[in-house]
Length: 432
Image 1 (cartoon, helix red, strand yellow):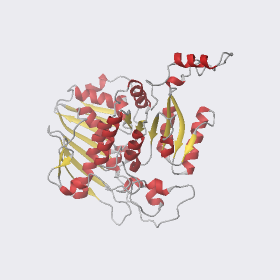
Image 2 (cartoon, rainbow, N blue to C red):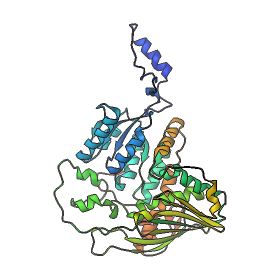
Image 3 (cartoon, helix red, strand yellow):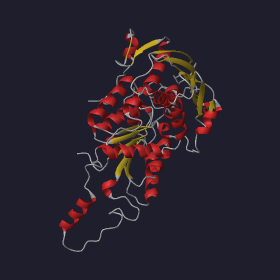
Image 4 (tube, rainbow, N blue to C red):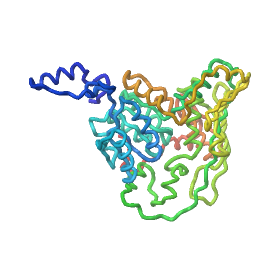
């Protein structure tokens, strides 16, 4: 049975149990009882992390700042990253208790782990989350949450069926600047919304590189996971975001943050646009496969148009809501808000947290674990946000307009596009 806040022994029962063990004097450290600022074991969430590359090591300190969380296990298919993550956790807790696992399934099989933080590459997000849910673990998973449309629906259904608390790494929902933007739009302060413009940066063209031997300590088969086999090559391993089998390029990898904010602001977390069409510049004589630049327009049934622009530099990314009476924009790089009329900005308090602060988002997961109520970035909302980007990419790849039924989650009169909603997983990886 999964251990949760609601099913753990209470502090009173814990002390009572101690009293029945022995009549001899027993000294219990104050930290066990929750004194001296410590959190009693009955109120701790014991976590493990799988996928401990650069992103995970940047976010782990945000988890460990919460006294209620105890990071106890790390898993990765690369020995060097696994060692670095263990050292980080052990240094924080000033012990050597953090255990390591090359295969994340060993971590999921542990009865002492309540929840997991998943920070693998995109190819593992959906399947890893589904396997974690089936193991009874609550989940915080980095974005994009799935690799395909079908995988997204699988994730929603399995977490719902098993009562798993799941937080997608769409942390901007918990950041003040974006919450202010959403409130301005919802209150009609820019009038009726006509358009949402989102911009991500241009993608690269990765050069071809010959295969090379798999390095010692690198479980390449595990790294590939469900994706088709291809010979080991550092150009693929280091730039996996720009290949269709392991990810879907900048438009999806970053774009899902903005489609998520759009859905969050418009109150459309259970639906999405109904038409998609765009153009792209594709890499020529390159190893990578995803667009260098692109622009896709999507239309909601309400008439609101969403425009995703992929161009320019990393620092030029933003999201803007355009209404009949004004507009509001958040610059993602600087966290600066601009608006018209400018009087809107006088309503904002002094708020400094930017997109890279995940503390409040992790705090929301803890609230959900305690109360067993949904997170702010729950599976349905996360699936709908990434679906928009996945359909944008399919429209670009097929080179035509796509019409989408958000209720049935099927393309209208397009068998080829419907077949692309799912992919065949490489054996032995499958969802039973």
